[in-house]
Length: 137
Image 1: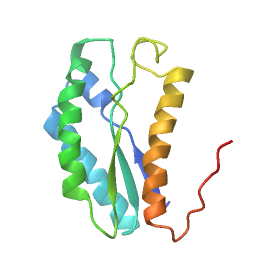
Image 2: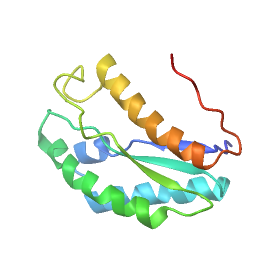
Image 3: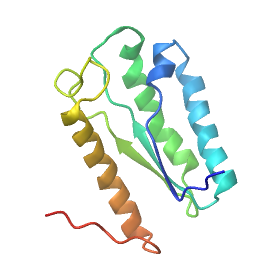
Image 4: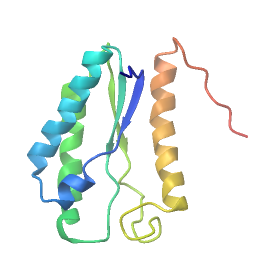
């Protein structure tokens, strides 16, 4: 029922956790973008390379998934409905920035928010039809 103008997507950890293939996760991320566009052809999408985990196991495949996301961003990006890459992986410390080696704590949440805002702000400045930037003091 919703028709968002901007969507932030940070998905894939659970797919990896449950041994889903990287290919199927990339395909499903593309399908999400397609569904969003069916509702709002002008939707702007910020697609994240997911944060690292120190938990191990299937989550060790995070770099493999993240390596495929830039190609998906390129293939889905359009002038009408831009898709932008957000690197949530680089600089995120899964030991220092999580409560359990997987889920972000306050420091991790701040890092994630800063990365989202950096890309969101740049995108909105390029598409100023409805955006008034927030001034931080």
